[in-house]
Length: 54
Image (cartoon, rainbow, N blue to C red; front, side):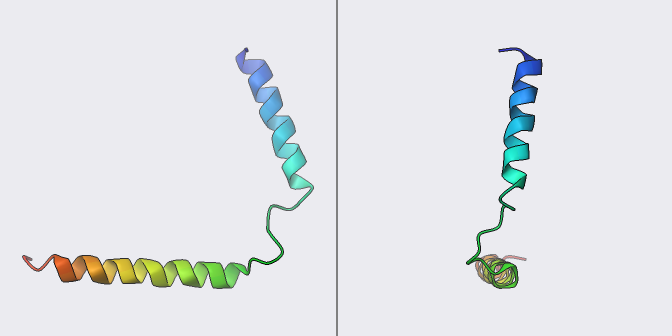
């Protein structure tokens, strides 16, 4: 496979994905983002609890 044919296939694949929108209907972006933020804050808190030597 050449670079040109691979790029053409990727462009075709990306164009097909635009038809569907990419978001699942049951996913709420605000809820997913808020959950990720809370999880990252929890990981930060756990990390700082174990790093007591500073």
